[in-house]
Length: 528
Image (cartoon, rainbow, N blue to C red; front, side, top):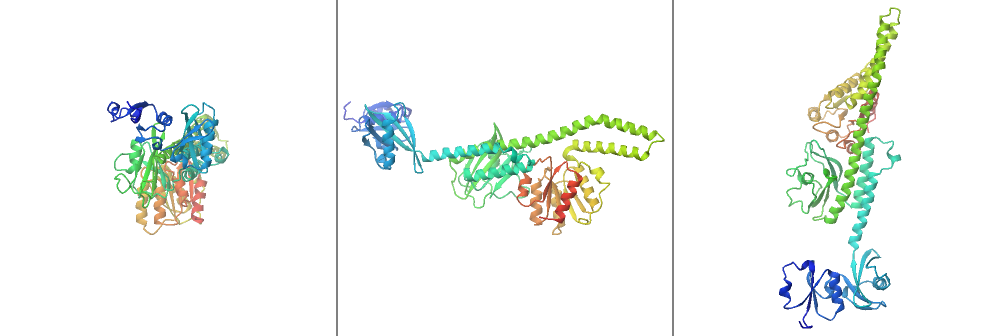
């Protein structure tokens, strides 16, 4: 092969491609090289000889100028013996930094980074001919900024998982949830730079995706639901069912897209994962087409991992509170059962004694019955009012609220009935509804004749507390609404959502009669 024949450097990963080296050998001097850096060194060692490089990323290119990065040859004394057009176009300060590092860095060092204004550079070097270094200068500004965003999101996610103990010690579950959600919204805006988004959590039993946080995304129409199914439930349903992210570049052309943001053009939806289980979705939307790239997806998935863990920890807190409270009441009932039984027996013996004070024995019997009733009510948890039976004997009509119309919505008959009797004794005109649908029917029946107060449970089979709140406010703009929940349990995060829109107050079951009376009186006499 004549020295005048051009040389073809084939990067080994490309050798299995469509171009056969044996065919090319008739026209080129073939040299196999392991990577781009080695190819550059080969070219640099004979800069005057025609050389071509065949690589898997760029196909064939000529000489050093076709590598896409700034290239320079530096002698041991720091003299630049050759540079390509890209290196020549760099700022003089960056050129000086590169050549200085190239000759002064320890022999074993092959890589460094420079920061110049708002731009980031990676410098690679390899020995060329004796005493000469070949340096590649790559701009990595986008990559560096992406890494900084990853670090910021990791830091933000860590903060979600480590809320300050002194801050949350005095907060109930709903208030802790509200604090967590404020932080999530803040981090999504500041670190992810998304303004239009929603987070939905998956109900493991119904497979329904319940809205938790929404910023600028239109809510579903009343009664509409999204399930974790691949068909008929939009992109969020598809993502929850498949456990895969979905980048919708054009909502108009995508049959899976379901209306959310006004004038939306593109969306990105990622699953919220806890280990291998999908527990929800994080949906982001934009008014610009093709607005989300693979890096946006990577960042959203990363932050989603922290959101999933934080939400799961909060759910564990709620379940633990419910379980501990219920178990404590059961233990107390067991511990007191024997002494209560003894007191009852002594009371019966005293009642048989003709010389005993009958008023005293009656009071003892009533006290035992009251104690047993209250402990049993505590053990029943959110299905009871702690002192309802006893309180009914002392409650009198309150002229401040007598005649006011109250709509009570709860699927638990015991609670619904107890609340109704207490309010009735206060003089309120009470309507009882056994579920959300019956409440909507009552709204329809009333028309413009609005009730004075709506008191609704949060967790019901058909509609949740926020939906009742939303429907009441849509029909009657300033109507006060009180929500009730068991031990702070709020699977749909109705409390946070309704609080942001002016909800009156929250009652945490099991509550006492005085708490109910106080909340209702305040709502009817001092509406927000």
